[in-house]
Picture 1 (cartoon, rainbow, N blue to C red):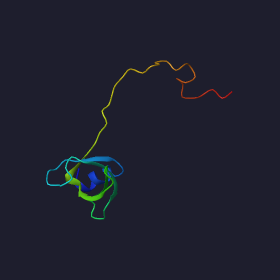
Picture 2: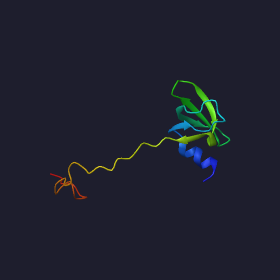
Picture 3: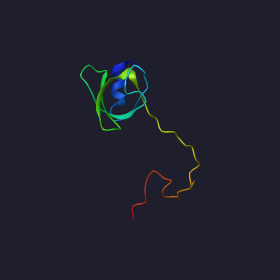
Picture 4: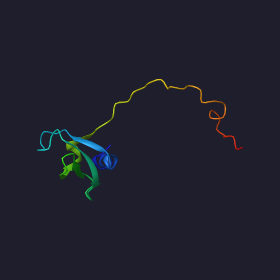
Length: 87
C-alpha cells in the first residue's frame, strides 16, 4: 500500500505521531483532511492545534478488541430468521 492510499484510510480517524523527526511526537489527533499532494495530513491535535504532517510520521490508533461471549446466544425464533414477522 502506498502513502496516498494510507492517507485516504486515515481520513477522519485518530492517529498518533510516532516518528521522532516531528516535534509533535507522542501526541494524538484526528485527521481532518488530506491535502492535494495525497501525502500530507491536516491533523487536529488533542490540544486543539492544527498541524500538517506527512503520512509517514503518524500511525493509526486502533482500539483493542475484546472477544467476549455475547450475553444472549439465542435471540428467539423471529430474530434468528432473515425474514421478520410482519403482524
